[in-house]
Image (cartoon, rainbow, N blue to C red):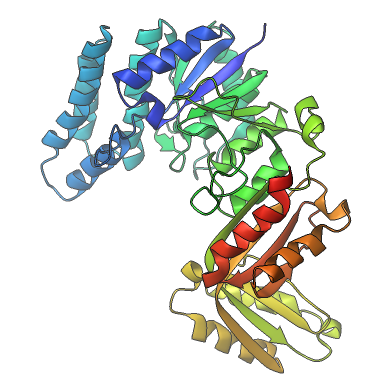
Length: 443
């Protein structure tokens, strides 16, 4: 016997049918004692998420437009589920309280958080569990920064009073009592914080996919599933665009060494993907593989700066970063040589300011030459201690060469677990397929 925290995403709690599946999953394992829920998601194509409807209410309030009909759509959806499931949790009382607050023009965070609040009340009644509001347990400072240790203590103290409970995800509060939400998808973070506070054996994250795949199924046909992945490997893949779990949800679980299990509500028989520390038995069993996964993103620009004797010129990289800071642009990578530095930037960050940024580089750095390479895609090949395995880079480059993909940039940096290549946007999918075929078909 142990303790599991189970978080169910919007698709898992979208309607009565999904909630019935959710209840069956929870009741199949008595260790699932603390349940974190999102607001209801879309039930079908063209449907609206409850959170989106609540944000729309706020927009109407801000523009002095009628919002009653929009809120009634929200209320009707919860009431329909309540009737469908045959329970009575007095939702009308909560609707009246929220309506009274709406007349005072509350913050967008308050309005959006009511989706999770109402759903947690409903699901607690459906399961026969205690309802525990996270408003005063997930703590933020006055500037909106999560207070991890204070949150940990508050959750641990409160949950010790409840053998089984349902908690709303997505929000907490600031010291003045105002509701503060995480970014979208933040219920993942709430679940991880709960798992850390109670020192759970596993944090289960139930969604509409059976975990992570070794590559994007829109690019690679029937890619293999990743059964076990380390926290570090996941961070590398998530950074390059492979996202099932909110990035910030990894940190609390990792600090407490709580494994995260990504599961599929619609296919509960699937084992999903287990995210663990590198000392976990499941990860040690799988460590013989070469590559864990491949992920990438398109639309980057590389500005290559060349200057003779650059390596002996103090402050050169600092001035590069100063230019980026002035324009509010981040950098993805800074691969360098003895007399060269390449600045890799997202086109989204650059916008229409590339000429201005390049002029600033030219003025402040006085390079001998500047090359601009546009429409670049970055692809990360990730695997535990990959750089310690002889021949990995050779196989990767051979695969791309055989596929007639021109490599415009290579960056392995200090990481022991990834090789990043830059290719032209037009070769993005072909490159991923070539790398997958070279490594993953053999696993």
